[in-house]
Length: 561
Image (cartoon, rainbow, N blue to C red; front, side, top):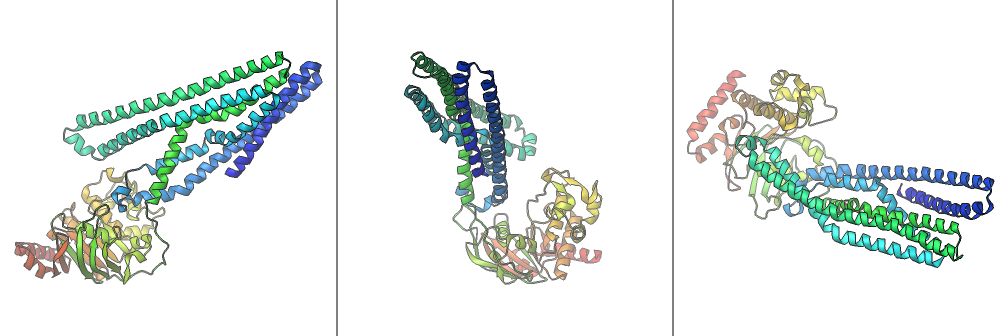
C-alpha cells in the first residue's frame, strides 16, 4: 500500500507540474492571441487535469489510512500481550509505558496528511529546477527561500524536541497519579485524603499544562514564521518575476507559473513544519514501542502436550522475583500426588504467594525444576498450562462481563453446561441464581456490587472451570463466611475424589480441613513437611487448639454430607 501511495504521489506531482505549464500557456498564448477557443480548450484541459489530480490525491489518502489501520492491527495483539506480561520483566526494563497509546500515535501519523507531505518532499528539487528553466534569478530566489525554510525546520527540531518530551512526561505523571488515586478511592474518601490528593494532582496537572503551553508556544512560533515567510516568498517571487518581465527577460506566463510552482515546492515543507509535534510524538512512540517489545519475552512455539496426570513434582526450587537479586524461596522440594491435597502454611511474607506464582509458571525458577505430569512447566503452551491449573489468587480479580463469562475465563462463547458445572463444584450455583440476573448478571470488573465472599466463590468456580488437573488456591477463604468455607472444603474433597491434586496456601485452620499433607514455610524455606496432624503437633504451640478446630470442622462437614 505504501508503494502504491508513492506511485500516486508521482502522478499527483506530475499533474501539478503539467497544470502549472498550462497556466503558462494561458498567459502567454491566450492573452496574446485573445482567442476564446484557445482559452476554452485550455481551461477544460486544466479542469480535467486538476480533477484527476484530486481523485488520485484522495485515493492515496485513503490508502495511507488503511496503512495506519493495518499497522495497528498487526501490533495490537502483540503489544496487549506484552502489557499483560510486564510484571514478568525486570523492573529496570519494565518502566510504566503507554504502549497502546504509542500505537495510536504512530497510526495517526500514518493516516495523516503530513505523511503525504513527506512523500511530496522529494519533488521539491524538481519544481525548483523547473523554475530555474524560466530564469536563473527566479531559481536562486526559490533556493534561498527553501533553504531558509529548511533552517527553520531544523531549528524547530532542535529547540522543541526536548520541550515536547518534557511536556509528554509531565502529562504521563499526572495521568498515572490520577489512576493510582482512582484505584485507591475508598481509602482516599474515607481517610480524609481527598483535599490533599486533589491538591497534589492539580499541582502535577498545572505543571503538565505549563510545559505543554511552553512547547505549544515554541512550535506555534515556528509554524507562524514558516507560513508567513512562505507567503512573503511567493510575493517576492512575483516581484522578481515582474522585474524580469519589465526587463523583457521572461514572459508574464513564466512569472505566474514560477509563483505557482514555488508554492507547490514549499507546501510540503510548510506542512511538515506545521505538523512537527505530531511527527515528534510518532517518532518517540516508535522508539518506545521498539524498546518495549524488545524487552518483552516472546513465547516460543512448543509441541502441544496431552492432558497431564495430576502429579506435581518440585525439586530444588529457588525463585527470584523480577528486578531482585536475592531469592524469595530457596531449595524447596515436595510432591503432590493425584487425589491428594497439600496445605502450605506460614506467616505473611514467608514465600507462599511466591511459590504459587512459580507453580503457575508465572515466575520462572532461578534454579531447580517444577514438573506437572512429568513435564516441566516451560514445555507446555501457556494457554494449555492455564487450562491444566485452576488458580484462585489471594486478590480476586473479576472482569467486565457477565458472571458466566467470568467463570468461563472470559471466553467469547461460554459453554453453559461447563459454566454451571464449575459453579456447582464450587457450591456457588444457588448463590449465583439469587443475583438479579443470575448467570447473566453484568459485572463491572472489581467495581461490581458483589461482596468479597461472592467474588471469591465466583473466582473459585472460574478456577474449577474445565476440570483442571491441579487446583492452586491462595488464601481461598480470606473473604468467606462459615458457609463459604464449608463449600470450599466440599469442593476440595470432590476434587480429591476425582483424582485431582490440590494445593492450598493459607494460615487459617478452616482451610486445611480437607488437606492430607502439611508443608510449613519460614523464611522462604521448608521448616516442616508431612502428614497434617503430625506436622501440626511438631510445629505449632497451640497445635491442640488447631487440631480440635480442624477435627470439629471435619465432623461438621461429614455430618452435612
